[in-house]
Length: 391
Image (cartoon, rainbow, N blue to C red):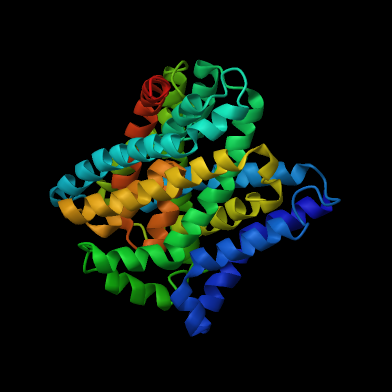
């Protein structure tokens, strides 16, 4: 119990220490809190501290609770200060369709490369075609679609767990690449429509946006923000109760996004200070917790290098294809990146990547694309599995 409390406090307070260091140490500031927290999280999760190195099994539950709680709190907070512009619609629509096409092409290419090797050792329904269907579903939707397609295609529990373990590790490497190199690289080679006011925001962040939170006015603002988030989350949860047979996460995130956007149009709510910055702090907590869950020791090469290669090709191949499509169709860099993240890692990672890009304006685009991905993931997964079986 004691270690669980210590671990919880570590996850909640580490971002504050990292933010302070990033303001004081110039080179850390250039790296940014997101990547620093990812590094700390992955080190914490792989040096025997969590979970299972003599600590209570409840540590895994703490990780699950914190990672699950931070995103629903962060989404409405970060949406409150967003502005919504019609000029971005073209890039968002193109990013949606090119992202779906990129995943399908990568899955098909991976099947042609690794399919025979996987089928040589496959048993039952654990064929390369069905694995391709699972990868299509998870990388256009999320883990919800992976679990659904497992049952729909009759894939074994062992293969499901293997794919899930590989996905956590390779997706972490994918996110690390984007935060460390990808965002800056893609902004150089693709159109960049990052709003001009972001430069003002960056300067404000460097001056400590959390200053004043401990004052009377700051605590009052926090109480109002907490009440607003409680109302939005409560309303979103109420919608899920009205639709008990629909996928919970799909409905919940869609409702959170809708009510968060609606709240942003209320002048008094929109004027509340600290909303975006408190939301970003929640994402910082999410970053370190999720990184600590990517236990590299859990990756089993005995489960099949071909399956690992297939999954890796789909993740990075789809990213490469999206970059090529964005270059041809002149999709702006940040929309392309957020689209790729929402497909590969699912909508809960959208606010985190928006924080890494320091561009809150892509949050709505990422969540919207992700919801559509949730909706089409199961259909597309089954269709691709059936088509690959004919090759």
